[in-house]
Image (cartoon, rainbow, N blue to C red; front, side):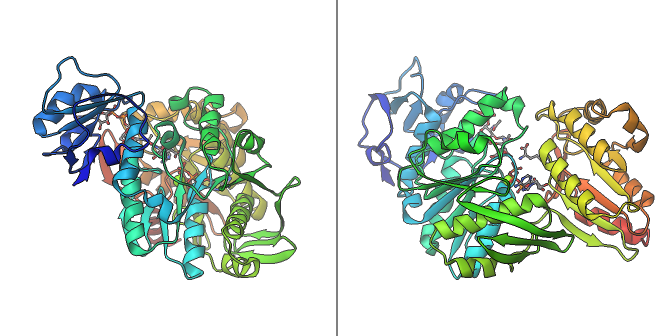
Length: 487
Ligand SMILES: CC(=O)N[C@H]1[C@@H](OP(=O)(O)OP(=O)(O)OC[C@H]2O[C@@H](n3ccc(=O)[nH]c3=O)[C@H](O)[C@@H]2O)O[C@H](CO)[C@@H](O)[C@@H]1O[C@H](C)C(=O)N[C@@H](C)C(=O)N[C@H](CCC(=O)O)C(=O)O
Ligand SMILES: Nc1ncnc2c1ncn2[C@@H]1O[C@H](COP(=O)(O)OP(=O)(O)OP(=O)(O)O)[C@@H](O)[C@H]1O
Ligand SMILES: N[C@H](CCC[C@H](N)C(=O)O)C(=O)O
Ligand SMILES: [Mg+2]
């Protein structure tokens, strides 16, 4: 039990109806989870309005209601807290409720369109190797040192974040690396957390269904840096023009990294092959198993972050060479018949372009590059023709297929993708709605020495079709098919 007034510390309250001297059991933002003596926080969402569930939350036992608009009918046994932003209040209350766990470890947030999971996961690996207990909040998995939890979001809701951080405190975790998505910032999921640092990767087209314009999307990312305290560090990629934008109003100590321009941390790519990258960082050569120019940025960001967190440069360089690739990010194998199958989570135009350019830069002319790709339903539709254009321009053959169609008609999504194909590339493309059949066709088209890229779903182990989740794993599927075809 916690005293309500203690968990309201630092919440910007507009009015209180009732007593704040009551003891509460738990906080919930979903009325269905409420039991006796809980706090219900009513949030206006994108599909429904939590305020319409206040009555039902009270019937289930809520004794405190946090809301932006007081209900017309006030129950005398209930305390009402009126705030300007329920989601912001929720995040601050969650932090108080769990004893402000972000203050008891060093928390680093990674934001940007692409590279968040890669950087956060590799920092987790690196600090583990350096002997620390470490936490990770990522798209793929949540880790409290060695314990794994299923990830439901890239950035969980604020209650879950603080619950995990508390668990990390209990385990003696010293560093936590977390992905900070634009949805997470916009919905105030990270409000009230004490960050030791923030890392910006890059910004390109994504999520315009949610943020409407690119400027709005950029400004949400910037808000994360605007809120960093002055003792924190803000590390940004200045080869991306939005890197400088992120630093405009931050109070944090500013650091830059870049491959093509002057920066505090720079690197050169000496070699780039399917075996990995040879980089020169800060005058020292370092080998990494990660593939592709874009991973040079990720490695440099990891190097800089580790140094800013106090690790020795020599040790960091040694540990970088031991890092393993992240599940579903340029994950590949070579079949018995020398067909290379790559599974990659490229689900934005920029990521797809980068991964295709990487493959093209290391394949020989007579090796075909066959791409299998789709786009998610109920998400930014404007990226679809761009991805169709890129896939068909940069591959020798393309099979368009379904990603997670969600509630949309799969063929309509594929049509949107096809609309981006230039006429001279029509002959390279075909469309097969069923993802397994599409992968099978790509495998049948491939000959020894060819490369198959399966993009968009990476580590995902399901396909969401019309609200139903079916087991599906790109890597296992291509492995099985190539074995069946004995290729
Ligand atoms: C668009 C979006 O981000 N939606 C998130 C949002 O849901 P919502 O706004 O639709 O909520 P809603 O359904 O309208 O409900 C409003 C409120 O009423 C409450 N409610 C609802 C029903 C009821 O019976 N009782 C009740 O109290 C709900 O609990 C909620 O508090 O708040 C929910 C609770 O925190 C999230 O689970 C949900 O994420 C959905 C599932 C989602 O798919 N989000 C994706 C787009 C997302 O967040 N992605 C980013 C990654 C992006 C990237 O890769 O960069 C992420 O961080 O994962
Ligand atoms: N630094 C980078 N710059 C551009 N593209 C990248 C970079 N790092 C990774 N990618 C590409 O983006 C894909 C997704 O990478 P990753 O999962 O690390 O990004 P993310 O930011 O976590 O994505 P999400 O928004 O889904 O959480 C990779 O599979 C790769 O194709
Ligand atoms: N974090 C991304 C994941 C997209 C992955 C893709 N497979 C899809 O389902 O659209 C998003 O929420 O847009
Ligand atoms: Mg991610």
